[in-house]
Amino acid sequence: MAKEEEEVVWNRETVPRVLEIVSTRLPQKDLISLLLVSPWIHRTLTSYPSLWLALDFREMNNAGDRLVSALSLLRYKQVKQISLEFAQDIEDKHLDIIKSKCSDSLQNLESLNLNGCQKISDKGVEDITSICPNLKVFSIYWNVRFTDIGIEHLVKNCKHIVDLNLSGCKNISDKSLQLIADNYQHLECLNLTRCIKLTDVGLCKILLKCSSLHSLNLYAVSSFTDEAYKKISLLAELKFLDLCGAQNLMDQGLSCIAKCNNLVSLNLTWCVRVTDEGVITLAEGCTSLEFLSLFGIVGVTDKCLEVLSKFCASTITTLDVNGCIGIKRRSREELLQLFPHLTCFKVHS
Image 1: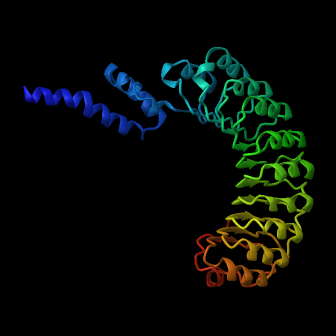
Image 2: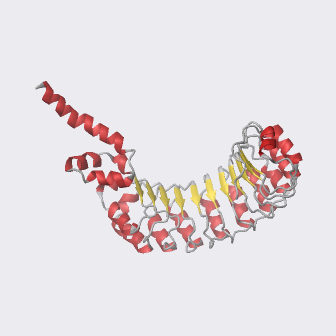
């Protein structure tokens, strides 16, 4: 009798608990396959809401139909994360269906990744964001169909965005930055990589109002000048800054950026107007730097590295000075003498 009771406890308590623990470590595909093993396992797994908080359709075919089908299931009613990064066959029509048939499922959604979904337009963004009131993270990398109108829908429908990735959205303008600045003053991460229509006017709006930013990516946006770069100094919490290709950044602008004394990572690749003066001021102000790229800057010399070593030798682990022809002592051994904790010597190839 005791043995039978032990078996009952094992089946009712131990096995389900083990299943729950193991299942949290399984990829989504394997977890769904496990549901098909037996009705008992299906009932057990679907009884744990924590297992069904994410949907991952990255690089999958028929992603639109898959998403609609998944959101129609009861177990995904509390989903918090959806990734459709580079998924195939996801279009506006799928987001329209979700809006009309599955709106209840996205009330708790916090993260939506539409990276590379190039068939999604402003209309699709309007539909999906209208049923995601608690969205915090929105990413729509590499989408030229997404414009200022899409940003209008986003700020209207989603009031709690703290992480926004617009990398490669080449058709957004300063109007979008104005909307972001006015509506997302608690924004923490912003990626504007290759948003080529932006100007100082728009960036200044962001810098004046979004003072909580700790990550700002301006990679390959060459239109900004020191008028805007100087105002980066307003971002007291900034830790990550990418200015790769900032052809108009001068020493004055970099000296203002040096006031961001919490900066940990700075990419100055191809910032060709920078000289020792700017880097020295940076070293004196940003003593927590761990990552610094000076790749391709011909106006810096060994002098700036000596000062950088004085203030940042104990923190820097990544330093790229390749292409800096004014720096003569740039072999691995010579750099290690100045920066003993270096582990990475090349960021760009």
